[in-house]
Amino acid sequence: MTTESSADEELVFSKTDRNRIRREPHRGSYLHSDVYSVVDASPFCHVGYVIDRQPFVTPTIHWRMGNRLYWHGSIGSRFLRQVEGARICVTCSLVDGYVLARSAFNHTVNYRSAMMFGVAHIVEGLQEKEHALRDFMDNLFPERWDSLRPVQEKELKATSVLWMNIEEASVKSRTGDPSDADEAHIPVWAGVIPMETALVESRAAPEVPDCIELPGPLADLIASGRLR
Image 1 (cartoon, rainbow, N blue to C red):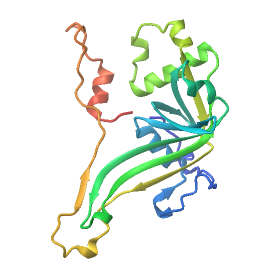
Image 2 (image 1 turned 180 degrees about the vertical axis):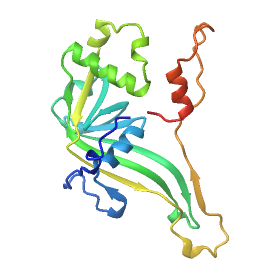
Image 3 (image 1 turned 135 degrees about the horizontal axis):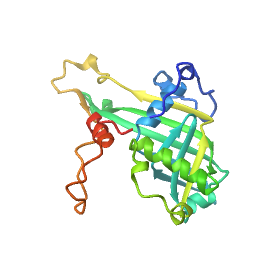
Image 4 (image 1 turned 135 degrees about the vertical axis):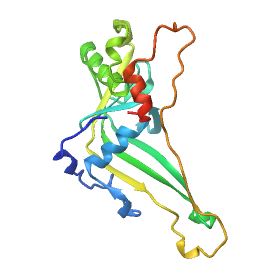
């Protein structure tokens, strides 16, 4: 996870027609720190864009450096070839639990969701691309990059790395119990079933010799249970 200074945590994205939260605005936030916390905790993002008037949404792994969001894919992807310079929308969402109420229509979920807007750009140059991918790898798996075989030029040429500065963004979330305490007299169980996304015990590939142990930084990452 990328950390910010205390001053950066108070920065706020301006409200616009695109990012303004209209329904239940009390659940929303425009703070950079709130947006970043969801982006950094989410294992996946979804990139929305339009090609020839047809909307597409592509799921992909992402990483963040400051206010810049990165993602990557194959150089042959239709999306990656055509999205350069286009305005896009990126979302990251986490479900924290099912909220069961005493009536069907009061059931809901506890969640955190960030929506971000910006212009997509392609990282140019093999050196710049390798540097970005190194940040990606070490952000996910601390100290991993230097332990691997060197990246081959053909691999870099076959991979596109894209980025966008987060120009507009907002976060919406829900926490807590069902909102039907006034119906507590109804004899139905109500409450929250928590949901977590966490790392669990690793499993070595079958061809890995017993003498090669799981690296310490990865063991620590798994023990922490966090995704990033």
